[in-house]
Image (cartoon, rainbow, N blue to C red; front, top):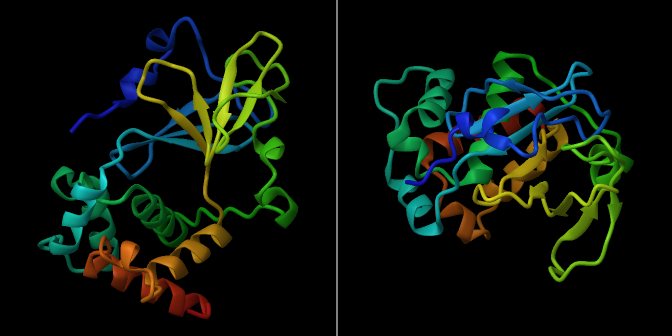
Length: 223
């Protein structure tokens, strides 16, 4: 398992890029510890939250998760902690599944609710307006990857946006993502619980399916 550890993202190891800045407001980004052992959080003083996935299993590995379960757990909190902190379990967890499970934990046990305006959900410039390397304004530019939006600043720091801001670093394509809001979590859960979506269902462990169904029922969300 190849892991990009959080130490990789320290000031010294990101030279010549230096300190990272919030792409929403230009303030410095600080490391923020998250429950998921394979996710590094970031936050500025204005509480704009971002994160980076440090490892993503391939489909072969994530398919093994459905046959696994967390042992010696009594509560839903225990189950979530086990899947996000036990390396033997976490390394098989689909990345999107892990992101969603972590946010459910934060909502339920840390009261960390996030709400974005509907107009901002799909608006890249709302959250990624400034260069995280030098704080200058990002503008779009033409680049060969038609599946991504090219962004760069006047200092020619170039990025590709697709589900997050991908850096042109030599660190296995680090992608800085805005934190998931409550609405996105609900939408994702519906997708994972959809019996027609066999690709997702084949990676969904029974214990996490239980967590998802309970969360949806508590919110009164139509499945």
